Length: 131
Length: 369
Image (cartoon, rainbow over all chains, first blue to last red; front, top):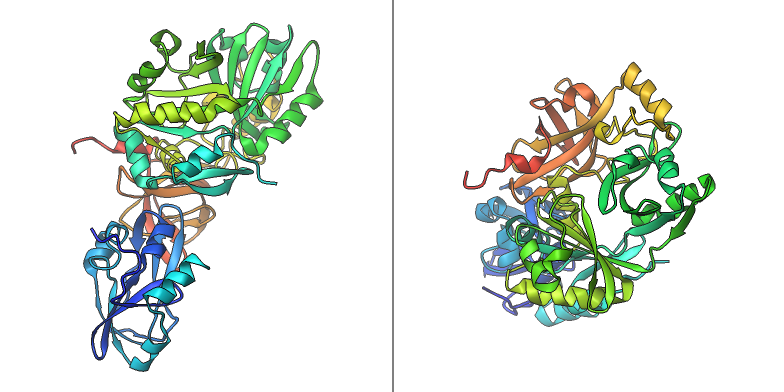
């Protein structure tokens, strides 16, 4: 089990999504430990559309826990090339392992320079803990 | 102003997420809503429900008077017996749903919803008649609930078994350490083994602590209002403000059994209910299961028939950890509340198909498949 709250091998968006680069033009995206923790038991995620073009800040999925519903936003612009079906079908994975098994979408970047606008682990930690 | 539970510090020390609810800061969850929910269904869980209101009614006319103020029959009670009942208004609408505890022939303790305490108290006060005294005792009482199969075993480790009632809706007064407690076989989860313990407000934290340590041997968990809500929905139990309202009668809330029209005494709301029973009514609370996994239908989401006409709206919805899919109650046209009916519920941009089922939901769950 990965209990690290702010792994430093990735970047973070202000809506509490993380972004991990897999190659020059491709990233995987998920929600942060903090996001899943404030939602509580996740029971549903709407399935993002593969091949869809998205702009940074667009809503890409709806995520619902027993107590509340929330949105997942695109931390970068690009095209959704893959969806983690396993997480869609078993949303509790995101509570258990938000950073590895619980990734949500793979995005092909249209503008890789957007990565520079995201927070690193330290900046994100202060963003969460110091509000 | 938000009120504080007497044991607030205890909850925080157990890492509860505290949220405002019914005018109090309440623990929403400790380890997680689903885990707590399943602890109650499989073993046992306990809740601090000290936010609930307690109103004492005493005097030689207490029983007779209370029978005019509530729709169930107070004369079916005996000392040490409790009864689910309601205060109705003249139109037959529900002012509050309550439990009446008969302490003695001239003394009754009424447990009311926290959010309705002031309203109930004022309403009772304004109707006082004969030799009757109405006293708000809410600040004095703490209230702890424990439910699930192992709950009797756990309680027996703490208090003498002679103080633990053996049948549903009975209660026993006793002494624990140096203070008085009442142990009542009542609850709000649908579990058969269920108790509520009344105790002095300032003893709540130490009792919770005792339950926590004794309960840990049984993997009994502290549970928050999140699990309390999902458990009561799975048990198809109504919540005031959702299923029950001042402009909705018990008939329309699928709780006809609570209204005793044949009891000898008149009671407020009786005429309206008789009339509605004769003339019929259009809508009622129905119980629905989503046909597939999906988002959770929640309060005020619209319900449609297959022709796309609106037939009602959701009153309560949750994810059922037992059925592993969303379930909801809805106030709908009576015809669609009949088990087997198919309806559609609009959750944001999606139209989801759902099936009316018999209550309670948890009967649909068969252990071992």
